[in-house]
Amino acid sequence: MGSGRHAKRPAPAGRGAPAGPGTSAPPPSGGVIATDVVASLVVFLVALPLCIGVAAASGVPVALGIISGIVGGLVVGFLPGSNLQVSGPAAGLAALVLEAVTDHGLEMLGPIVLATGLLQMVLGALKAGRFFQAIPVSVIGGMLAGIGLPLILGQLYALTDHAQLGNALKNIAGLPALFPDTFADRSATQALALGALAVTICALWKKVPKPLGALPAPLVAVALGALLTALLGMGVKTVDFGSLGNAVLIPGPERFAGLADPAVLGVVVTFTVIASAESLFSAAAVDRMHSGPRTRYNPELFSQGVGNAVAGALGALPITAVIARSSANVQAGATTKVSRVLHGAWLLGFGLLLPGVLGLIPVSVLAGILVHSGWKLLDPGQFPEMWRKDRGEGVVMVVTTGAIVVGNLLEGVLAGVAVAILLAAVRMSRVRMDTVTEGDSALLVMSGNATFLRLPQLIATLEPLSARSGVQLDLTAVSHLDLACREEVEEWAQRQRGKGTAVEVLLPRTAPEPWKEPAPLSGQQDVDLRPLGPRQGGRS
Image (cartoon, rainbow, N blue to C red):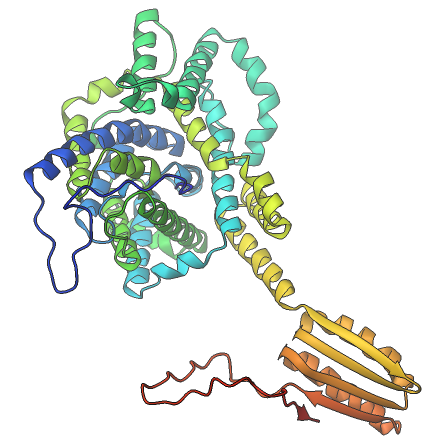
């Protein structure tokens, strides 16, 4: 997922622009295909270390990460939605997958991912893709930070060739003992040095001049780490790859019975929400990077579901659209689906023909790459920036992140959305109450939105007026008067009239029901554009 701060890349002449109405896009030329083939190699070089690293962080065989990357290219790559974003296993789901595998076993991963894909397909068919755009920016930022922080905490252990302790809170509790243990062990110290080197390369590689700087930073970190390990004879842990064929774990019918477990269903829902949101947020970011055809959200959601259904049928990791691969694809000049499909073919070929090469890669180097990815997701600077822009939204962001770290990702997102809704309700419920007294009479003028959230303020304002012999309540300037406030006003007026007080209530004029669509104006309808006269209120 990305921040969307990249500048748009101008579309090459004759390419990248959507076809006009009633016309079909011309077939890609040989030059376009050649550019896309080169772009596919760039994406492959970015995707390979990420597939391996995400699998290692997820606590599953490394080959399953490669399989998910292959599915993201050879399956999702052909499907409609977006032409340029690339799918594969995502770092943002690594902590969730690790938790699911720990709680329910590796054998249940396939059914969970398959069910996730089917649910995504249903949501895509129901055109629910656009609903994910309604999530507040503060919740999105908090969600990304809530994914990034646990990812960093978990990978700090892998960075030193130690096993992580579990959830984020347990990993935090174990940090004081981690580094003393690391420096007391020579191989652990070597692993930490390699991991720190990988973090440094990923953070600073963009400053390296071309042509060397054109190489993907993760690939450079992996290659250099493997080379140093071999030349210096370091005793660090390396990737245990095995083979693609042996890694495939097709779930049997008995495994699908586990989907009846409410805890497993909760994992499916969590995977569905997060995978869908990450893919569609990535689509929005990628669309800002190029001037070609825009993403079609509902087909893209359906396509991601097909990919996860296939990945689940193979027992592999869940997939999403990944901003790191997608941005590399755009920046490499890709304009068609050819690049993302071919990147899956390169992953397949590498996994089948060169599996031994993967066994040379230190685990701590992959952890360093993921620590850098987690830091970009966390983006600590976004918190003070959001606080300066809007303190209320800053609170929403902090609540979302904190709830994810303390609980889980779905609970955190729901908590953030709940706080954002409450914040919006409070801000929409701003009402002004002005009281004017003359002798023994009083006039109360209200304006704004009077909702149940303002009932205490309304009651406190009406109470001093009970001693008056005559009261007029002017509510004609109230934009929205909900039932709770209206009944409070009418009941107060009725009580006062029972005491002999003269009370007049001017209610707002009747507004159309908010759930009804306004009638469209016809071409023949006359519209009176003269200024409106004084607002007429109803009397009660």
